[in-house]
Amino acid sequence: MKSGRNESSSKKLVSAGAAAWLLLPLLVLVVLKTDSLPQITLYSVDGVAPSPASDGEKDVAVADSIKDSNREQQFLAVNGEVDVSSVNSDSKNEKHFLAMNGEKDASLINSDVAAPAMRSNLSCNFSSVRMNICGMEGDVRIQGKASTVYVVSVSDYRPENSTVIIRPYPRKWEIPTMELVREITVRSTAPPREPGSSATNAMEDDTAPPAPRCTVTHDVPAVVFSTGGYSMNFFHAMTDVVVPLYNTARRYEGRVQLLATNYDRKWIAKFRHVLGALSSYPVIDLDADAAVRCFPSAHVGIESHMELSIDPALSFHGNTMMDFRDFLRSAYSLKRSWTTPVSRNNSSSSSSRKPRLVILLRRHSRAMTNEGDAMAAATEAGFEVVPAGPEVFGDMGKFAEVVNSCDVMVGVHGAGLTNMVFLPHNGTVVQIIPWGGMKWPCFHALGRPVPDMGLRYVEYEASAEETTLKDVYPRDHAVFTDPLSIHRQGYGMMWATFLDGQNVTLDIGRFRGVMEQLYQSVTLA
Ligand SMILES: *[C@@H]1O[C@H](CO)[C@@H](O)[C@H](O)[C@H]1NC(C)=O
Ligand SMILES: *[C@@H]1O[C@H](CO)[C@@H](O)[C@H](O)[C@H]1NC(C)=O
Ligand SMILES: *[C@@H]1O[C@H](CO)[C@@H](O)[C@H](O)[C@H]1NC(C)=O
Ligand SMILES: *[C@@H]1O[C@H](CO)[C@@H](O)[C@H](O)[C@H]1NC(C)=O
Ligand SMILES: *[C@@H]1O[C@H](CO)[C@@H](O)[C@H](O)[C@H]1NC(C)=O
Image 1: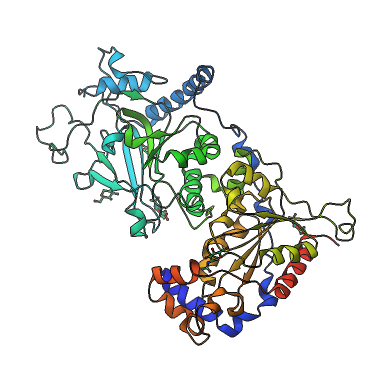
Image 2: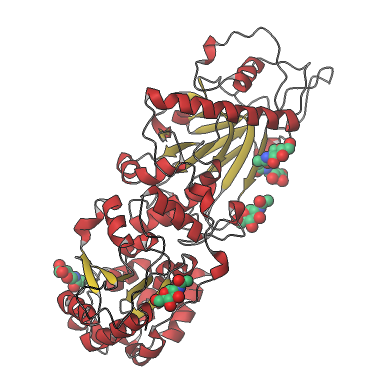
């Protein structure tokens, strides 16, 4: 479906002639939905990332966890099916699981008194095209090294789905990406037999191994995700991991334990601001974890709605992409929530502020061969230009500040444009689309999400005159006469030709015109 739409819409939009001078429709200023302004209260609790627990911080965590465990006990008291007479070997664990705060070794618990057996519930949703997820509450035991999550004594247990396998990365339709993600097995067990019932219970699977005993008990929910897949790419990190983690874990306001499979130390370090704002606890390396960790509830898999955005109809509390950006701004301690448009007549005087424009400079492909001229054109149009080469992406926190200090971001299609998430609200993104029938996929990834973020979108589609492909292929080659025929030769061919295979040489006259219009639109009379 995706590629079908891709081709038909691209066909409509791109022909060599039509692509050449799209000056009028270039400036697509999207009207902001002022009724969807962010509700700021959500992230005020722990905007600052706590560092991995020192002793001083532990007290706070324990105080919080007492509150939490009261809440959990309430949940269990209200919802649990209590069966006092039915005691199995696990009920001792269940009792301490209810009573404990913080981490303790289960063997230290001395319980001779029979506890009521707990019933758990489990609900999985495999219907999304993006991800498979399971939510569970009750007695959840995670054995990281075995990649197994046990849900003990599930009230509506069914033997036919007692084992569910999930790759916790929301890009289900991309098989090669998903192959890079470790499988997690969710194994549910039947409730204990009713006393006095006949010895054989048809619903019980006697061949299933029993759940292992807890070695560590947590009193906060768990979220299992993956830092594998394609997440080293910044666009994928945001759309596949950070936004879905926000969708899944933000509701717990920090009192949630994140567990990562395909644990990537570099990734965890790079995204420490975000991870620290989502969870008060260090992320657990699931693959290396020898413990059996018990949780009152868990999510396996994270929730993704669409590329680089959030559907408020599907998100917890109706959270929006603007809420997500407010959360990020808090996590990175960024100053500007909104742009502050300057007035045009002042900006010629040296004392007044000019609108700031950050221009992303790529180096190996989709580079602007005349980036110096492009920057000069933007400066002449009235902007203060901030160049950003690949060297600045290394320190995310620092670059987030640079982006947040700007009003406009300009760049050729690529992961760097994902940094738009740090622009202040009402900022503008200019995406330069390289030659080759690339409008639809580029728009889908980095254009369509822009208004959801409370930003404005401008598209500049490079013409056949503005690509270095013209130095490589004759003008009667399919690369120019029928670029979509190259797409039809496969994703790899499309990628090699139009994404890796070209640089962009902007028509400076055309680009200057676009910059001048842009300047008018972001300044006040
Ligand atoms: C678990 O069951 C209780 C009712 O027993 C319900 O309130 C709760 O929403 C269920 N949780 C899930 C994840 O299905
Ligand atoms: C188990 O299978 C039944 C149908 O046989 C389905 O209704 C239910 O949602 C499944 N549960 C899980 C956890 O997959
Ligand atoms: C399952 O997920 C789909 C798509 O995300 C959603 O539309 C649907 O409401 C979900 N079903 C349940 C029972 O939550
Ligand atoms: C693009 O330009 C860079 C220099 O900035 C060069 O190293 C690279 O080979 C060029 N790529 C293509 C596809 O022309
Ligand atoms: C966004 O900025 C434009 C000027 O660039 C201004 O006219 C408009 O009122 C701003 N919108 C909001 C909601 O601040």
